[in-house]
Image 1 (cartoon, helix red, strand yellow):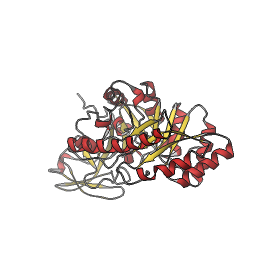
Image 2: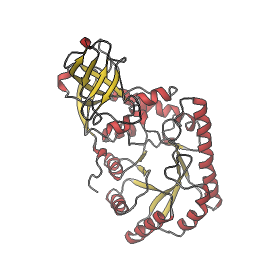
Image 3: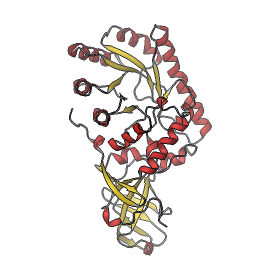
Image 4: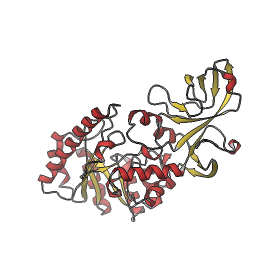
Length: 368
């Protein structure tokens, strides 16, 4: 009997390729919902991982109707898919502001919001709102430990005073991303997640004290999801769960998601008795983080010797076991940027290729 990841007819797929397995994706979506007590309204999955209409529609079919994204192209992809509510976890600057407004006008059936963490962006969005006579929904982005974007708690009074003067801006909630949390020790991660949550809650309490009610709290990614899933007052936004990857499987073993995206590569050269070369360069698998970039399901002992744009040299115990053309199946260490390297995925069910999905969200721009 074949392994779940193997293709019966490998000649139907050129390499390198990214394969996805919808049955496993569906199981991961259901597990995600179970982890928040069955309440899909407590989820706002980040689509930067999948970037595909079909994957987003699978989540909507399971009852998830609000999403998070990073780019205007991803936001438009979600609107095309029929998403009800889309947050862009990014603040538009420069030409993106007009693109953002055009997107909102073009897709009236989708509610859009974006982040703000500074006075300049608040003022710019306020001007854009007034020029087009449309309200713009925003979330105050708070730095809860990542040190990348987000305002500090000390800046809140100033931001609030500017925000309330912009009559065209509607504050929808408070947002915080704790991507700095990735310790393999679950107890340490729990403590760090608690600290991030308390910072976000402090910001929420301040805004509430100013008379602003009915705000939502959006927090976290994948590593902190184990902790935030138990908090009834927050909306969680993991993304990797739908495909999972080798890196998170090692760091977050308590999250029992299945691998649902696999790299297919072939041996293109046998170098010597202990080295082979496959067609999986760093244009085909994410080159971050540092260290091994892929774990091969049918060659787990193979180790990376070095990698270049189109080639990956592997150290193996006996190269005679890897003849020219042999197919290897690998799980990337980091699936999100790996997906962004491909324009399509091959859809596999019961060891057969059944379809091809386009990764349209990898584009910088769709129609707007």
